Length: 320
Image 1: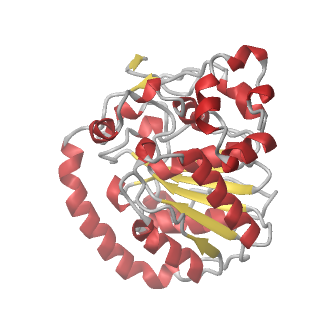
Image 2 (image 1 turned 180 degrees about the vertical axis):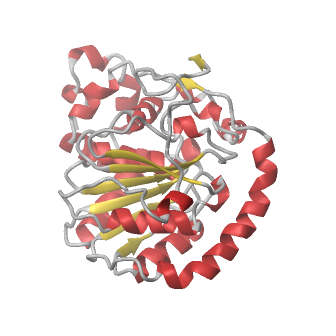
């Protein structure tokens, strides 16, 4: 297949390594053929920023938060079961770095109980850039879910790194994705801003910036123009700086602030309720999350004003 021929002349040289690596991957070629504009996007120089990792003291609070969120989940289960019923459309869950489908079991079971068609990602443990042929695996997995669900639009829920993948899929398949919900996902800056980056670095042979798939990571961080997206984040997150898990709100783009820790985002009652609230919004009738009444006590103001605004919506510690 002549993948190189799909490239604009200004992009061909820069992305030749991607072409050589993936042109024999039929799944990757398939979604590139359907989304040829991606190659031109890959040629754009996108901003990449580095932030200070979260305060190390937040790490010590993760354990107690896990216990408190689990206890709250047990206590509030009857209330959560009263959330509006779903319309049966498919919802695909993508785990965070180091996680597998078992880590999203609570999320999937809850959403399934509301009447949606919950789907695991089925790709084993998420090892990030150390996974071979990940772009092709993601696209094939997504298209299988889409076809198996009768070609109904798929909602994507991604926890941490899984949210980065969810945004990437939304760029690849904007006509097949209903909405994207990220949970503490580091899409808005360089992975070195997170506390797990040293571990990621041990798993890859060369720095991420030198890998062909790095441009795909940058694309995932670019604004989603045609797909509604809700970014759930916490300023108490000990793994991912909240600044890179949010973006400036706008047309069908919002940030929802919770008070959970990073490790409890997958079963926090406030996160579960926010997901249920977003999934029930009809396709084509998006409205922002309303922080009114009792919600003002449970959800934060999602105020991003504590950092100066840049073209990406936040002030970095330094540029790379």
